[in-house]
Length: 465
Ligand code: DUC
Ligand code: ZN
Ligand code: ZN
Image (cartoon, rainbow, N blue to C red; front, side, top):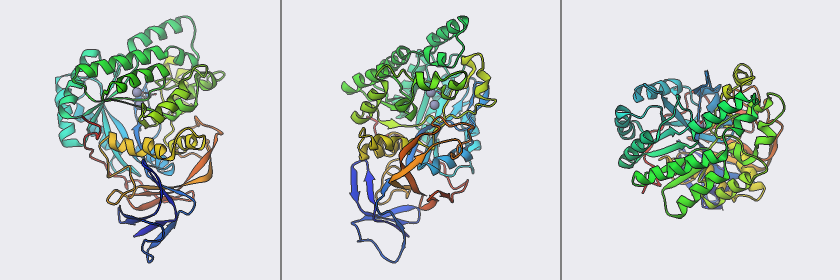
């Protein structure tokens, strides 16, 4: 048994002073200060926060993309996650066009099995919605613990689903209780803009953002929302929402009581089209991701922070999809459309969103809710994960609000040869991390191991109507 003593326990409901008793892999009790047992190992949390281990509901380890593969393996990526206070990930298994869904899933299990430092689940990307894939959705929900499916309105010829395919998948989800996750960008229209830009000789990384205007994110978001309405209000979760106009669509749907949710990511809360994607030369390639970073001359970042406060944005995930500059991002030298899309950030989400607390933009409870509790509820892991409460897994982070975190390629643990946040020094620091009762990181020392992480069979979303 271990007693985490003297800290302030923060759940989604807010802070409360208390001592957390861990028995084996689970939380046994939360005591009023000083009321816990005395003859057990203690972890001193005086002056610190005790929060549920964070859950990153959107990662892409070893994802094949644009002729290469995301550079973090399940081993390196989950280790970096753990060091940064994330104790569960939900990665995207992939069914490619023409592939049997279950074969794509088996391939993902093979990549992850025995390699993860923390617990993990899978969503399933459907790259080809047909009769067999629709049948497979039932099997995955019923037998495999996979209760969410990602569809793409972008990337024609790769992952793209047309509106008819989307509607059929939504109808299936409505009947079996699954959640549809949507990459909402109008891919065919974007492809026209890309072709026209390249014909004009506009090849620099910034044109990745300029050819994906917010209107095409908003249009796709709106279309997805209406298609879900036609599918008897199938629950819909918009991934990596980046733009004010897309947020307006989600907000309008939620205001009428629709079962529509959205996440954003740290990169959209802090970084911009001009300052990062528009960096001189080829430097901007570091920040090529889709949806793209948005203009600093518009109100996107302020609107996204507000959306997090009002719950129009329910979750912060990373969309962790790292590529090195060397040999990977470089594939797009002279043609931005060939730069593999993705940013790595799994290690920094807890700190970057805590910075929102330090800046007065989010409450402590909302910090925990958006990075841990709501992801657990949204993706069928609650109350096993996402809360400090008796009976829950002892996935716990002791967080030092007075610490500082300096981010950079020399100190991070992700398998990337650059940092999207190079030189940033921010408030707060992950002090100690427990995964199912084991101290896997403490005071900058890492003690975890590959293979500790277990696959999580997930239930249905708590937000299902
Ligand atoms: N967006 C990215 O930036 N990378 C992977 C897939 C995606 O949708
Ligand atoms: Zn996406
Ligand atoms: Zn993604």
